[in-house]
Figure 1 (cartoon, rainbow, N blue to C red):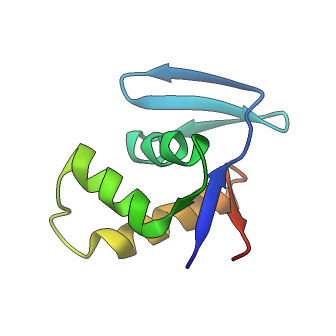
Figure 2: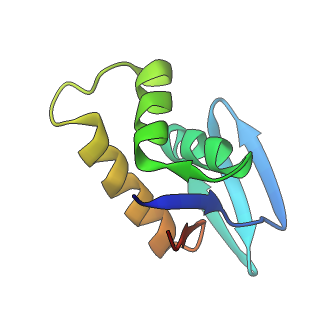
Figure 3: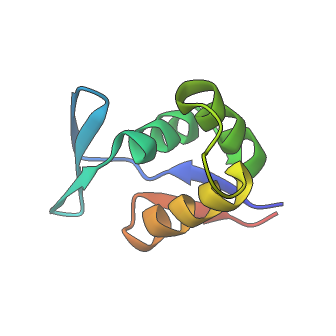
Amino acid sequence: MVRVRAVLAHDELHHEGESLVLVDGQVHRVSALGTTIRRHAAVGVATLDELATALEDEFGTPPEGSAQELTRRAVETLVAAGLLEVLEP
């Protein structure tokens, strides 16, 4: 089971669901989807299933693909950008 948490940001600015996140001297523009993932992963450790459920609650069922697969891809993107970290089981 993959578990993630948000990397502590030096600063964050939120506007209309999206955010600008400053981490390690770099500013990242984060979509509403990514901002929701970071918000849920910031209050503690979150699993992919928990994040997929939160995204479906906020944005509805995806028109194509499974919520879990799309969430996994979004999490991978945020991890690669240094905005989330994967925790060992």
